Amino acid sequence: MLRPSTQRYSVTRPLYSEDAFEDEHAKVYRKHKRFLHHVIQYFTCTSERAKNTAISLLPIIGWMKTYSIKDWLLNDILSGVSTGLVAVLQGLAFSLLASISTWYGLYAAFFPVIMYFFLGTSRHISVASFVQQWCGVSYAFNFSENHGVDVVEKIPNTFESPITPSLQVFQMTAVEAFPIAIVGFAVAFAVAKVYSVKHDYVIDGNQELIAFGASNIFGGAFKSLAASTALSRSAVQESTGGKTQVAGLLSAIIVLVVILGIGFLLEPLPKSVLGAVVIVNLKGMLMQVVTVPYLWKKDRPDCIVWVGTCLAAIFLGLDLGLAVGLGLELLTVVFRAQFPRCCVLANISGTDIYRDRKDYVNIYEPEGVKIFRIPSPIFFANIDFFRDKLKDAVGFNPLRILRKRNKAVKKMKKLIKKGELTLTSNGLQATCSMPIEESEDESNMEDLDKPTDYSDLPVQVNWNAELPANIRVPPVNIHSLILDFSVVSFLDISALKGLKAAIKEFIRINVDVYIVGCDPYIIEKPRNCTFFDDEIKTSIFFLTIHDAMLFIHESHPPKTVSEKVSGSVQYQHVNSSSTSSWLTIQADMKMEVETDTKPETRF
Image (cartoon, rainbow, N blue to C red; front, side):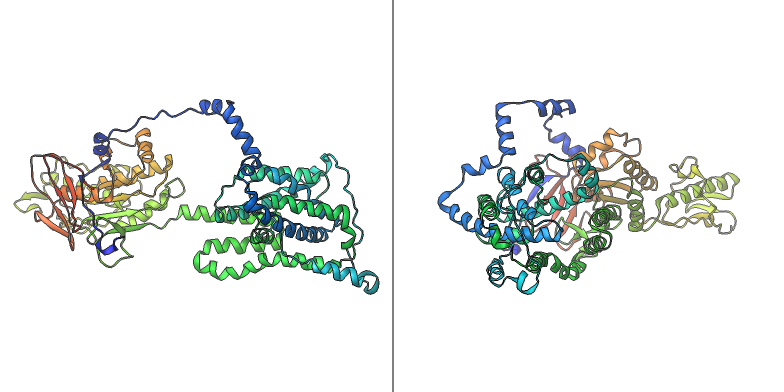
């Protein structure tokens, strides 16, 4: 591998506007499918699609075909046994936490696991920390009779008969069940995603939702607790070597053995031990509070969402806390999109690269040119912000300049007509002294927003020079404005109208506007929405900032034939009968515009 300091490249290609690029490079015609076609295709059944659907709904078909008995079975057995023993204690503990009979927690460790074995796509979710030594101690000391300690008590050695869902119960619990379902699935999917990335396999979010839904329906028929997963359980299953959900199936078998055969051994277990199990499982979650200072330093909006959601969940309850967290997250997204970090770009010396001028020392800012970037979509909510930031970047309000120029032209025409301004060899001169007039209220002068009418003026007005008759118009120190849209993902109709108005304001004060780096679909939007007219042409679009910069240097040539941009970067304009301008990025990183009768592109 070459060291960065020795890497060079040489490119010879045309200077491209979007129009020139499309003229030279033909596009592939793609027929876009209509909505009806997608509907028909969705409901069309073929043998291949039926096979894929079956594999999708029953992921066990896919991974069982590749199951390695030699490499995976022993690990799954060890992990399954550990998972089963821990699941027993966790089931009892969570039942205690929910203030229901302890065996319903054991049901949650059996029925949903069986269903997820067939329908789930994650190979690792389940399990928690291992504390089974307390069972033998509790059985030997008989805490209930000797010390009056609350214990687990009777565990039935059979399952209750399944029941059908109760509409009355559904009506009573629907509101509370919804946030529980959302949180439960979100936690389970997040944990599953972590381990799928770590072990390089794919999980399907839609199938996971189906799997957990079916698991809870199946378990609910036997009155089990709602099933999800936990960070600690998943960490144990993965760390003990579990490879697939065979470990989960074996854990369910362990729970089955406890329920039907040896549940009596857990009856003298103190409830305080189950409370310890709950605390141990919550430890990882509670210790996340130590990450708050780190979040505050790295990403304050995310930190605010984290703290706000946590406090809302504590004081308002889980359902309202979840709603508050969702609201805060939406607010951060809105604020980031509505108030993006706009910047003015400059050329990095010796390259065709442009970066924020505040971030680098060795930069070159082309005279008379401003390069403005907005790093977000432009839509109705941030178009006014975009226009305000653009005015700040160029240092003036183009509409105000336009109005003052129109007022000045009207005044000059009026003075010429009265004979108070005459044409001399030095331009227009006042025949008498005139006071400096302050600007009038321009808020209702719609005619001043139109393009300046220079007809009937005997000379061309130089707005950056001193004007006659004490007329004052703020100077404009740029002749070109480049808008970098390389990170603009979409434009809505409102933004398009605002953008059109902003561009016209600059064009009417003789500032050329160029838009660069657009996605092809962004360019199609203006074409389909009557964006272009006599003032705004399709030629304002260029492929890159550097293409636009070279075009500007050709339109506004420097005083010399060849002028260095910065350091080793050169812009050279050569007169030729050829109509093609070509960009060469030399091996020493010199850039020049030249003509070629036999153009070619080299990389």
